[in-house]
Structure formats: C-alpha cells, structure tokens
Image 1 (cartoon, rainbow, N blue to C red):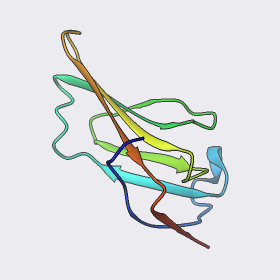
Image 2: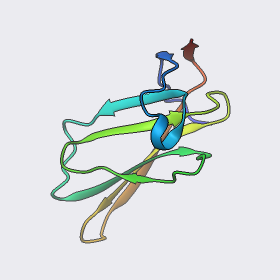
Image 3: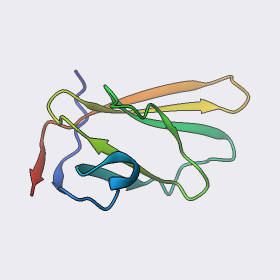
Image 4: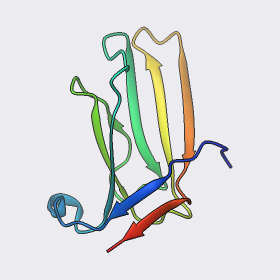
Length: 99
C-alpha cells in the first residue's frame, strides 16, 4: 500500500466512449516531465484492457478509473540510456465519484 494519495472528484462522462466507454477518467498534465531525457509510463493497476501509456511531448495523460478502491495509479520513469529507472504508486481510494 502506498502513502501517496490522489484526491478530488471525478464525474462520469461518455466523452471518451470511443474506445473506452462511459466512466470516470483521471486526466493530468506533467509540465515538469523531461521527455527528452526520460520515458514516462502511466498506468492503472490493475488495468482494464489498456496497459501502460507512454507520455508524449504534450505531457498530458488520461486513465479510466474502474474501481477506485482496488486500482492504483502507477508512474514509471526510465532514462532513455537505460541507466536509471524508478516508479511511484498512488492510492485512489479517496477519490469521490459522481454521476
């Protein structure tokens, strides 16, 4: 269990129905991410049919929350030359979900 938590309110939407279907989505921007030096991979664990997504030049990402009490957000960072890697996990259980 991680002691890092993401809090806030997610509202159900069908804005991303293709390809993910209606649901709750967590969208964030990583403005300080150095995508020239590192590869960043963002995923939900467990993931429902998407797996890790690589952060691209716009530094935005979107993930579907299907079960806030059992899923966690995982961010993995890998230096492009392979000499360094790290990961962090975030608890989602304190998110509020609304219709």
